[in-house]
Length: 339
Image (cartoon, rainbow, N blue to C red; front, side, top):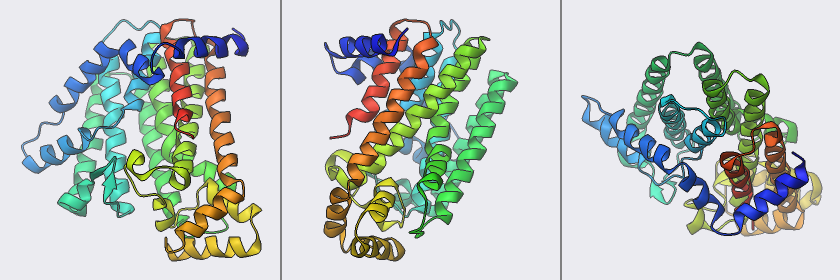
């Protein structure tokens, strides 16, 4: 099917209702099954494990990664029930990374709620994150598919490497755009890719379809992270559930700052560089002005839209059905948060 026809179908499907709501409605039964399985898999003889696990998994996230598993499996006509377990595994891996991220970043707010580390302390958050990782791998074994285990174990390792790379890059004002993309590919896009890729392997032996879903997940994940980084300098604090400029306060060089330093004046670059090195938001107003005037927001937005479009194009070889249309809408949703 041509890109033009894909575009038309996406636009037609988006018209009647909210695109993201229609996506969830399409897999409502499966999604409810995932939401029921999550608490059942969080039982533990240690009360604190259950308490923190339940708190973080009930924090109101969209659960896009498990949603991606359900859509990918259904679009290929999967008839079993293991996609529910696989979606839960993906959610546990994601939640574990959030617990560890918040400790590393000393974050106190996520999705508008206090982080687990701010309520129970860093040691408890790290160890419960470890519990979620280990429970996820227990469930992987139950799937009894070595190829899926290989995908998820390799992805988990790459995600960890991405987190370490990001930590090593803190305060580096000379970080290149290429190095930045390597980090977001590893730490964010990789789990999106693992979700769609493993669901493809679960559902079919058709290598073309599996490759298409894998590529879709990667492009979708890149688009999603680019939007997040755009929002850090252009978003609304209440809508984001975190403070504007959090990345700056953590000394993270994201694409808006990389572009601003490269294309702004010498004075502007010095101001941004000093803030990154000092991990300070003292000049946040000035820096927001610099980012906007340098064209960094427009550039980051165009990059996000590019990867969302690539995600849609990767679906051209997937069977034409309601689930593929929903995956197109999901890619559109990823960039709909851009103003």
